[in-house]
Length: 138
Image (cartoon, rainbow, N blue to C red; front, side):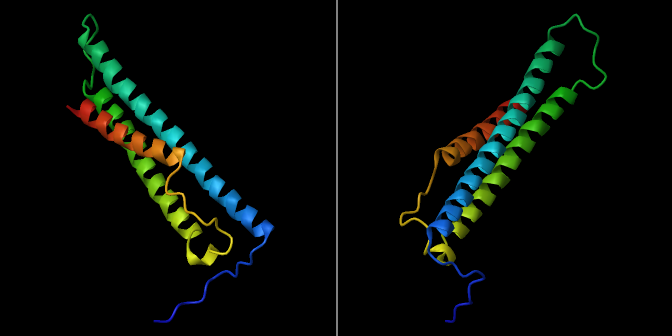
């Protein structure tokens, strides 16, 4: 089995190690910003779906032209937020796998952290997004 040459030649130095750390922290920040955006979309979608549904059923208002529109729009926002968070999570995991690959073995820390607080919160938010979507759907 022959191994392909690496694309980059990594030499251990403090400069390259701190560069690796900055890249790792940048991946965390990107995941956190994706989490923030997705949670806003999920929350806004839930608000639209439930608030306008309750408002329509309260009575005393003229019947809407498209009565299902708030639910459809809300479900669309919830689905878009959950899907975008899933894509961001997959991209994050691929980047971490690359950062801990053999290419960067000389400058990466000895122990690989399998999860961070941002990653844990992302998994919780993904579960919540699916749950909220199902609850609003039925």
